[in-house]
Image 1 (cartoon, rainbow, N blue to C red):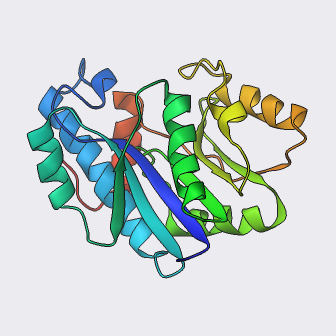
Image 2: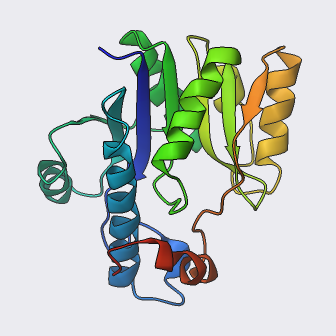
Image 3: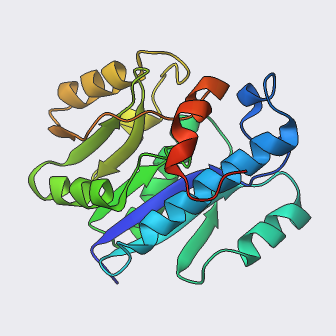
Length: 210
C-alpha cells in the first residue's frame, strides 16, 4: 500500500442528476456529458500519479443500473466505494476517514469538476502534507476544490455547520483549522465549473468535449 490516497468525490454522470445548475443553458443530457468529460480528464491526470498515490472514487449514483454500468467502465486501478448520506461536508469527512482507516498517512480529496486540476497539483498537495497537517486548494469563488490531511480527525473541519454554496467556505474552513491549531498549506487558486459561463471558459482544457 502506498503512503497517499487521492479520492475523487463525484456523482455518477446521468441526465438530470449532475450539474443541474447548467441546465437552464444546456440540456440535462449535455450537462451529464460535461460531467463525464471532466471526470475523464481528472482520471487521466490521476493516472500520471498512481505510481506513488492510490486512486479512489467515492460515488453517489441515481439508479442501481446506471451506477453499475458506470463503475464497470472505470479503469481497474481505481478503487471505489459509495458516499454516505448527509451534507457535502459529512460525505467528504467520511470518505477521508475511510482511507485513513485503511492506513493511508496522507489523504487528498477533490471534486470532479475542476478541469484545471493537474497531476502536478496533486503531487504538490501530497508534498505539502509532509510539512503541514492539512492542505487546501482554493477556488476563485471563495470555496475550495481540494482538501487534504494527514492522520487527523477531519470531521470538525468538514462536518461542521458550513454554508457550502456560499463564498465563505474557504474562510470558514481556514478559521476552523486555525482554532484547532492545524497549520494549512494553500495550493494554487483554480476555477471550478458551477455555471455555464465557467464551462465555456474551461472547456478548451479538455481533450474530449461533449
